Picture 1 (tube, rainbow, N blue to C red):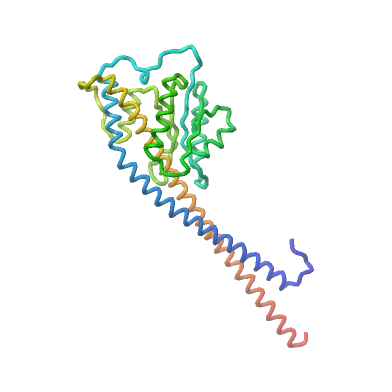
Picture 2 (cartoon, one colour; picture 1 turned 60 degrees about the vertical axis):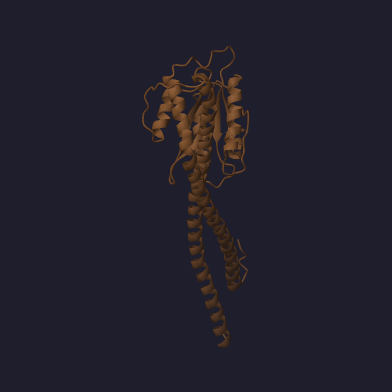
Length: 305
């Protein structure tokens, strides 16, 4: 609080100086939020374009995998049904979050979904993708066995291949008995929904549901001849299927992050503009009061009062 002994005009000038500094800080913040809004918009468009270009290829792999699982009548496989073991059962959860903040409730919604899922699983272990998830779940009661980070860049197929290879190896070695992936599905720029996918072991009904959800038609059991054998083709398709699923989730989560950040920065810009308008009105009043006070002092001095 300012000292009451200050002259009235001096106090008004001090308030005006403080307001100018505050307005300048808000203007600088506004420039940052508008720039981040434009950057997120450009990144969102690029991510959606890449997702649309690669989706047909991986959709074809998914359909072929379903045809083998349902129509080929193949023998039991590790990727379809796990053999019961004496050691403890472990469920792995791959969590896709952002490396940066300032994205509204994007990360918080993912964390809430993961906590709900882990409460339903047996011995869950976590594999965060993104620094936000790593920092949050490092204080959770669930163990972190690996951490993937891509420095907020647009995910590539190499990134998806790295994660896929790690998951398959750990699954075949018996470290994980089932694998889930949690990411944010981009229905629209205003509707972002945390989504859970069951990756391994494979389930024909869930694959069918994913095909229909992606816009495909319900498939019936088809009979094909596979060379050299259905088992060989199946073993080759599974890594491609998982790679496509993980890559699609990575890119869609990246697009969702940019959409959430774009919305958050847009709201921040609106709030900053409103604060500037209110402060400008208040500053004008103080300035007018200063001018009036000075004129009163001049007039009083000229009249000898």
